[in-house]
Amino acid sequence: MAIDSMKIAVLVSSAPYGSQGASSAYQFCASAVQAGHKIVGVFFYQEGVLNASQLVSPATDEVNLPDFWAKLAIQYQFPLEVCVSASLRRGIVNETEAQQLSLNQFNLKAPFVLSGLGQLAELSAGADKLVQFL
Amino acid sequence: MSILHTINRSPFQTHALQQCLALMSEQDDLLLIEDAVIAAQAKHTLFKQLTELAGQGRLMVLTPDLEARGIKNVIGQACSYIGFVELVAKHKSQMAW
Image (tube, helix red, strand yellow):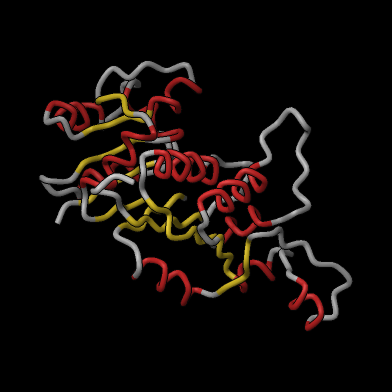
């Protein structure tokens, strides 16, 4: 790793399809780790929480952004944190929330985890830079 | 304490570019990404102001987003994602408009 490597936290607030923000964020993260920097975590907020759905199923010759996020996060060992209140509003639910809310299904993709805005504060406090993608 | 400003929407769509230019300080840089790359070619009301910024070496335009739109930047310095990462390293913080 380069001596001048940075710890970067990334905030994503746009959906995987329909706007480019999430795709830009992914490409930024991929380039940052390639350049020897450390992504300390990616926080998904507002429409960005839709990146965490395991039901996203584009045509097989198209980019599956949730899959790309999952692979990059596992390879470079950084957390994918998803705002829980933004998620529940948009139908992104994990097993625990599904039980609590008496829902029959859950759809949060691994290794995304539901968390709160406090975690965003923690991520940015532990990082040299916070980069936001709208 | 310098800031990297990023804009991702066209100046024909929102006032983000206009508002950003009004608030940038002298040590800040501006990076145009996504639909904002059109601002580096099209003749719009802010083009003169943007040209001045480019003349000071403070305007960057993301190459993959130019290529995806078939646009060549008339002003500003073309910049890869690695260049984007370097700009983040250079500045104290980033602001997305």
